[in-house]
Length: 83
Image: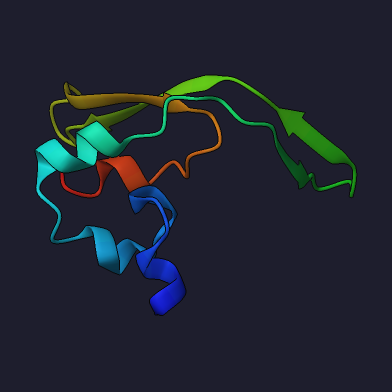
């Protein structure tokens, strides 16, 4: 737990982000892109670098309720937890 205290907000476990106010969450979103790599279904490495947008969409209306722009290496679910 002590190691996690020194991590940036979005590198901490989701539980540590749940009580953080929305304005602080938005201010802490990482914007500097980093290289990422993972293995695909064929066992080959896939690389990426860049940015992405995260959208919170209403299930019945299909309206975009909130949006966040971040570096591409941020987990898709993290920035939209408070919505």
